[in-house]
Length: 142
Image 1 (cartoon, helix red, strand yellow):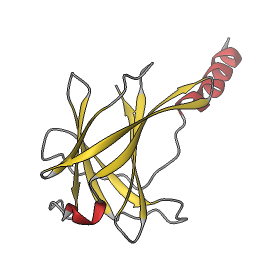
Image 2 (cartoon, helix red, strand yellow):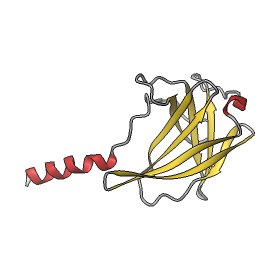
Image 3 (cartoon, one colour):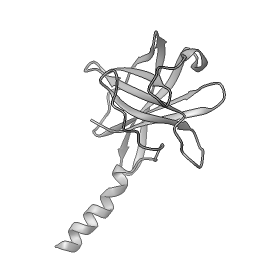
């Protein structure tokens, strides 16, 4: 019986695996969302370049706020008027992505996320600050 339990747990782990996008941040959100690190995409050493807060509404509206390392809003002009994002779910050990776009609106980016086909899910945001390609991973969302 114990062997069956151990095998079930070990075989189920890949379903919940997600690429580690960077160091954990412990900052609370300023707008009621979750905070994650923005890291240079593909860099061997993942260090915080910016911090981002993801705020989600019941109607699937997503707002993304970008901060410096000290949680002060940054100048958005270097990021362009729109950025790319994905809702990612794991099915059968495989990542299924549903892309969407976030458009600059004042002090945040805003868009409508596709409805995830299952929970938990991840939202990955890809953007550039003119110098670096950045990735922000919000994982294990429900």
